Image 1 (spheres, rainbow, N blue to C red):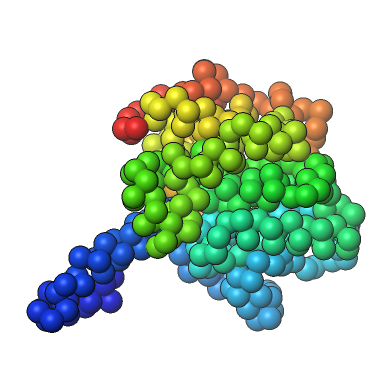
Image 2: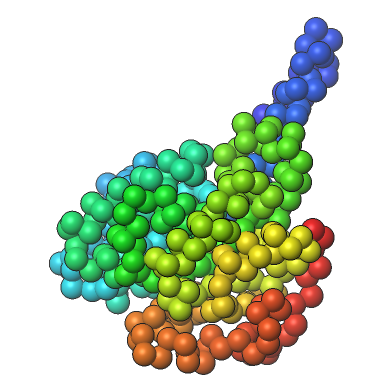
Length: 337
C-alpha cells in the first residue's frame, strides 16, 4: 500500500508523467482487487507448531513450487490414512498448519504447496503429476481425504476435470472449507468483458474466480461438473461454510450462477454461524472450524455412518445453508447479485 501511494504521488505531482496516471492507477486498482478477490489472508507461520520440524521442511513449504510436501514425517509412511491439504490463495501455505497439528496423530498429512499467482491450469496439472508421484510411493494415497480451503476448491476441481486419467482421484474423499464454489462474489464485477480482460492480466486468481466467465462454466457446470461428480462422489464430499461469507454466491439471483454454486457445494453442507466469530481468512486456524473439520473427518473414516452423521444433518432446505449447530440460526446475509 505504501508503494501504491508513493507511485500515485509521483504521478500526480509530475506533469510530465501525468498522461500515464490513468493507466497506472487502473492497473494498480486491478492488482489490489486481485489480492482482495483471492480471499485468503497471509497468516504468519506459527513458530511453536513448526518448532518440532526441520528448517528444510519449512523451506520446502514456503518455496511454493507446486509440490506435495510430507508435513507429518514422524513414523513410517503407509501406516496411517492419508490427509492431503490444499491451502488458499496465499504466499504463506503455513495457514494450514493448525490442521496439520490437529490431524498428524491419526493421519499421514501432506500439503500441496503451490504458487497461486500462476495460471490455475498449470497449478492443477502439477497437482495431477504430484498425486501420481505420491501414489507410486504410498498405496494409501488413492484413498486419501482431501481438505481444501477457499481458492483451492478451484485448483482441485481443475485438476480432477483436466486429468487425462481422473481415476487417480477416484477413491478420494473431499472436505471443502469455505470454498469459492462457482466463483467469488467479490469478483461479480468481472461480468463485464472489459473488466474481465483487465483483471485477467493483473491477477490470474481473480480471473479464475469470475462467477460469470467461461472458466466458471467449465468447472462448475455441464460436462465438467458431471466429470467431477463421477470421480469425487457427492456422498464423500463435505462442505463447511460460513454464514455471511463475503465470497459466497449463496444469495446471487442469477440462475446460472446459482446453479453453478450449488453444483460446487453439493448436499452435505454445514454452516458456521456468525456468532462463532469465524472469518473467511482465518477459518483454518479457528477452534470452532477445526471442531467441524474433526467431525467431518470422523464421519468419513466410518463410511457406513457417513450420511447419518448427526453433526452434519441439514435441518432445512439446502439453499438456506443451515445445519444443526447450537444454537441454530437463520442466515441474514443479503448480498446483491
